[in-house]
Length: 116
Length: 117
Image (cartoon, rainbow over all chains, first blue to last red; front, side, top):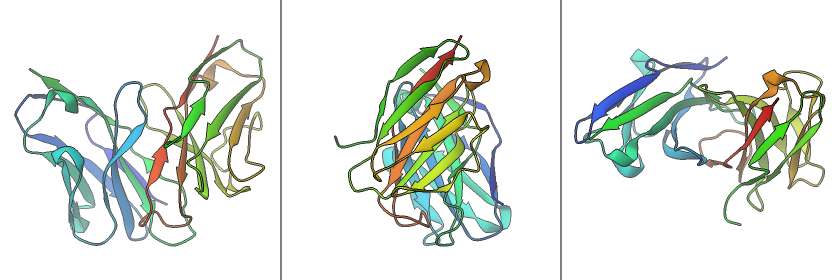
């Protein structure tokens, strides 16, 4: 079975400083990993995904994440936070095997707050 | 429309009342998922459809929950005899493909916020 743990429920940064949102996963098979963002009263939006190609994945809005198999981690980073980045972020894992594990498994979420 | 549409956006139900939540997926999308998101938590899987077939309903919390997708497009999640613990946001997602997620993205609707009083 797969699972995902987001190590921080809340992260607060100042505008213009780096962002680090941590995620560790557990999966019996080679995982696909995703980061989704959820702004208030809006649907979940895909930021980026790892699907066994390059380990450093670039996403939208300047976010990127690095897949580290040895550490079973997939941390999300951004060099410089913007006020509009304030939202809830979810790390998500699913199985790579065709036809199996068709659900996405979500972490508990990290609320990112950006101070002016 | 261009995205996944859910209705109603908000629903207040009295305890014991039956409710029906609707999901209009993106046209042509084969896969459809329902998730439940309690306040302050991540979404949790409820059920999965591939076209009209419900292939996985392992996440449905009780037999009060029932989902259908009779023609392989619109889906309805029905909750009978609602309880306070059913209060949550119910999210629907659709994907063009089926099976592994590596090739096609899942698109989420804005959800239906259900409050049981």
